[in-house]
Length: 119
Length: 336
Image (tube, rainbow over all chains, first blue to last red; front, side, top):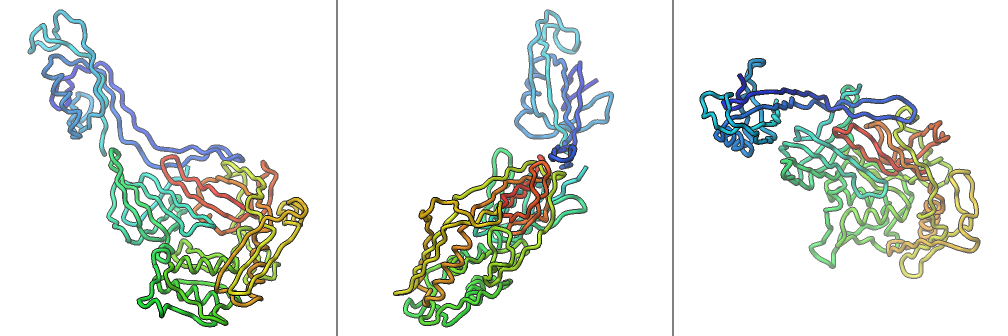
């Protein structure tokens, strides 16, 4: 199961990117010349479902504090990430069964979340 | 692939560095953007740029401004080279009736003394054979050490600058490759620093310009002393000959006036030297190459570009080293 700062998120899509910062130059009399400047820390993009307004508000409260929180997953060791961006979309539901611990009429949100790793 | 490297005294997590210098500029300037620093205003600043295994010092000077940028939470540090000390050193005598004065002193010696007043003792100069204070003492008061020295340098059409190692230089440095044939003191033929070829050239735009051409120079000295030098034809660096460039009988005039010119021969020399300096077309080329820390203002390079059809020596009039995540490039304005 996936958690971000102990908030349960039902992950549907996972993307991770790491990047070297490389400038490309093209001299008029030669091929491409590459200048390596450094590396960009990992960026994780998740598409997930969140159930209940409590978790919705908990996640939203993290957008201003610049703190790092643990992303727990069955795939990787726990790693801390900074919350870069959150995008919620309310879903049309009559009865949710994703979280049996919550009322069946709890709202369900689709969440796009971007996390930065600060290495 | 080349791995970039850079260092700036007391700065870490560097984001970008720009170092620029210009033949006409009072000082070179370094602008450093970083996330952390330990420097204060007035601290020494040394900047080194290049690639891992091939880097070098491109700037030595003093921190003049520290600015914090929000929301980036970055610092922008501006430094000027050591000659800024001479700019900031304003000479004011305690007694206006008794200013600093010099008699029968060579120009290079006078400038050396003024630089020393500002604490700049790393000084190197040529021999101008140009003496001041022969008939009247040269009095220096209510002027900066740099301004007075620059006025002297302009009279003899020489250059006054601080190099990237922190040495103040006063030499016959014309803004074009010198051939050593002018007969003027200090005219030594230039040896090109290196050859730039198309394999490193990112862009090149050569052209001719007559904006700075002056074919008549008038110099006013102390009472009753004046001199004129003029020539109908002007030097074209593309052909290496003097040609009728301005309309016949039309003169663009430059004037210089200084109470410290107190002999007719001195005035005539000043007029002749400045006519030789200004009476020429400027063959100007804006050249951008892959970053090269060796390239510096006031050096001469050979540009051998088959794309441009040019193989000639050029003087680096302006240079800018730009180092950032966009790579390391060196932009120059070349002249000949």
